[in-house]
Image (tube, rainbow, N blue to C red):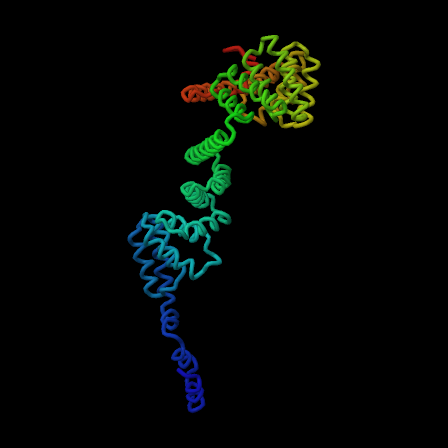
Length: 410
C-alpha cells in the first residue's frame, strides 16, 4: 500500500494506527507475529519429545513450527540435527543449510553438522564448513566428530600436509581413543612409506638411504645388520648428522658386555659429540658406556651434564639414581627416581628402583605401592613385546639396559 494513501486515511478520520501498520506490513510478517506463541509451543514440544527419544513426534513438532514460520532458525536447526541423528544426510543438509543461511554468526554446531553431511554426500562445500567448525568448536565430542570427518576428507584427497595437523589435534583431544590412534598410526606410516619411496627413487645410493635401511633393521631387531649399514652411510658421508650416535647405540645394544664394542661405541659417541654437538641423549649414552666400563665417577659426570641440559631426560634421572643406589645413597636417589616415574609412568625399571630406594628408607607402604606399579607396567610391556614380535618389530623397553632379576623384590 502506498504510504501517501495511508497518510490520507490517517488525516481523513481517526483510526487505530496498529491496524494501519498491519495492513501495510508484508503478509509473512503478520503471520509470524500472530503465530509466535504457537511456534514456541511446537519447538518446546519437539525438544521434549527429542529428549524422551520420541523422534517421530519431535520431527512432527519441528515441521509444524517451520510450516508456521518457514524462516525460523531454531526449528530448521533442530530438525536438521534430528535428521542427522537418523542418518538422513540429504534432508539434514537442507534444513541445516537453511539454519546456517539465516543465522551464520551463532551457528558453529550447525556448521559442523552441515559439513559432516556434505562430506558424506560428496558435496565440495564440506571442506570449508568442516574447517570453520573444527577451528572454533568448544564441544569436545562434536569437535572430535567434525575433526575425524575433516581428517578423512583430507586423507581421501591425498592431502597429507593438511591431514597431519588435524590428526595431531584429534590425538591431543582423545589420547586414549583407539580408533583415532589407529587412524594416526596409519597416516604416519603411510607418510613414512611415501617419503622412503621418494628417497629410494631420488637417491638410492646416498648416505641417507643407508641410514634409513639401518633404522629399519634396528626396528626389526637386526642390530648387527643395522651397524653395517650405518658404517656404509658414514663411508659415504663421514659427517652425516645422527649416524655416529645411532651406530654407537646399535653397537652397544647388540653386545653391552663386549669390551671391544664398548670401545668402538665410545669412539663413535665422541665423534658424534664433535659432529652433532652436545645433547642430553648423547651425554646419557656416554654415561652408559663408561658405566659399563666401570668408570662410575665419569659416568655420573655425563649423567649430571645430561640432567643439566634437560632436567626432564628420564635416562639422566635413572643414570644418576643407579649410581647413587650403588653407592648406598637412597635418600639422594629418591629425588631422581620420583622425577623419573612422574616423567615416564610406564617405565618399569624406574618403578622398580624407586621401590627399592623407598624400602631402603623404610617407607614400606610407598615401596609396596611402587612394586605393584612395577608389576603392572612390566605385564603391560610383556604384552606389547608379544604384539611387536608378531609384527617383526623390536621394542626398546625402559628396563632393557639394567633389567631387574625376575621375581626379585626391593
